[in-house]
Amino acid sequence: MGEVSPITPLTEVQTRAQLEEFDVDSPRVGIVMGSESDMESMEKAARELQERGIPHELQVMSAHREPDVVADYAKNARMRGLRVIIAGAGISAALPGAVAAHTDIPVIGVPLSGRLTAAGGLDAILSIVQMPPGVPVACVGLDNPRNAAILAAQILGA
Ligand code: RP5
Image (cartoon, rainbow, N blue to C red; front, side, top):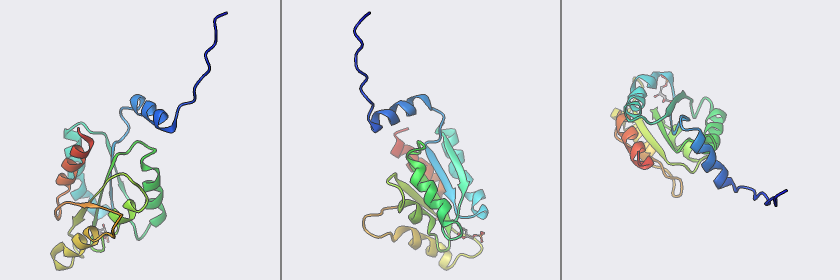
């Protein structure tokens, strides 16, 4: 019988790299939004990613109405294979910041206008841009989810 070489345990990083290799179709970009009413707009980000062949997922979750759902999603994002999160929200748009508070993967915020918008959408823009030092959120233009998708593709190098 030949000599049996000892098995060296994989580091967490190596294990993740191997899993990513096998699971090529798992979403790389998570698109989340604060309400069903944001869907029509945020689907434009999904369309752009679709055209670029970047696996993604779309989910509705509200930072104010379902804070635990948002926290769980953000905490598990990296482990699930997500590499960028696009978060769209209107009015007091807390979602991008709430996601960024629970993950170290890049978060791109999309300020949205809508029926309750104040100051022409400036409410959502400032809510997304004015993050405290150490917790960044990238912010694209008002009602411009397509730019978020393009930026996500650039971050991924895809
Ligand atoms: C935000 O409040 C959502 O992102 C949406 O843009 C806005 C209005 O939400 P709904 O009242 O339509 O659910 O949280």
